[in-house]
Image 1 (cartoon, each protein chain N blue to C red):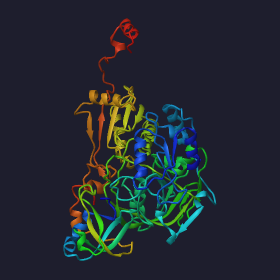
Image 2: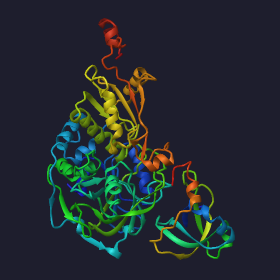
Image 3: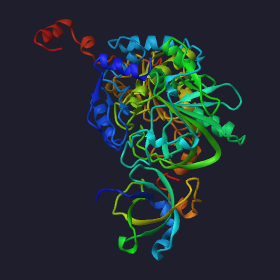
Length: 474
Length: 103
């Protein structure tokens, strides 16, 4: 399934709105997408973009979701029934995550329909949207950044924002602690060697899901994508470096990131909801080739507002990945994990089965999430008892308010935890270091006895409730 | 007033107050408001358009949160420099950013 087939499936399921009226890449497409996302609207295909040739299209809200059913489009992307429950989706997603499939190399692919090399490269050929008033430039936000490790065969696919500087240069946000950043800052740059770099835009929707997955260091996300698709992903060799890219992509940008080179990147209206960024010197992606499909579709995410693709990938997929890691990899008695849309990326809620966790288990889980680079966006962790559904915000808020000891329940970490450089409260020193403190809130009761909970069913006689019920009450 | 023309960070301008006052040209990194392309130019910058022969608006991203707030300065681009040009950041501009995170 490539992006075009995915869009057709969205249409067939009533999850697509095709916009025939011309839109401006400069804020207008983003504004429509942002408003659409906030009300849980359909995916959007903008068929005419101001200043761009007929056939060049923008696509937004591809992975946003209907309110309360944010997993629907991910289900469609996996070829599942969109009526599937979240619990069923979790089961199928985990099954596929656990069965990665190696890719296959092919000679040709649609992404090579048009090839621009060297001086013919012009990033402005494509309608990179200007997403928020105040952004430092035009951004690509939904894409697979493909890089290979200096010392091994590990190839990382990650979704990192990229800002257009000039017709052949992009600034890429490489936050310390993230895997691509690790490859560059710790391996390529110290060896004074340019890092081959590709950005693959569009293609099979599982690329976005794989690039956003919490795959450990050394795991090739293309194998994860193959598992999610249940078939080998077809790769073709890039024109100007030794990386391999998905053959069905809409656009592939090739080049290198040179050691020691920086240009200012940001500000950007990031997923935390502030046009902040902040502006920082970031590595420069020098573009040596662009290949693309004819009449390409350029997908985008207007970050920073509730219900966008970035928001749902966090809530729908990362929650499952965290649940799998804590329950199956580490063996803790976790009954559910959720990163609520209301706390963008920052605050996972973990439900722990009462009486089953060893003393110290909550602190161990917290330390695991606090210390790993890919979890750099997490800075507040909330632990509640296992009967609570972590996706019910009111339920876990009540638990925190009633069960978290204001002193003993709040735990502050050491100041050297990996942190994305996007929080508004970070000092310039913390931004440069990519580190800071985190907290976890322990609202679990563990093995401690708790008094009778006040519920109608438990505290009042059945005949009283029956009378109430007959009177129309619930 | 529609924000056409160019934009620049206040922190990029800070080291050039003397040139702005005297009307002397200097090298500056700006972005076009038409397509958000990065440009490195040799230009004159003035507070009033009457001070320049071919003035275009230069919107300033203020130090705090780096957003455009007020009325524009004016710029006369004398020469577009090679895009490979990376201007050395003056220490003064680094000092100014401690409160807001941008570097």
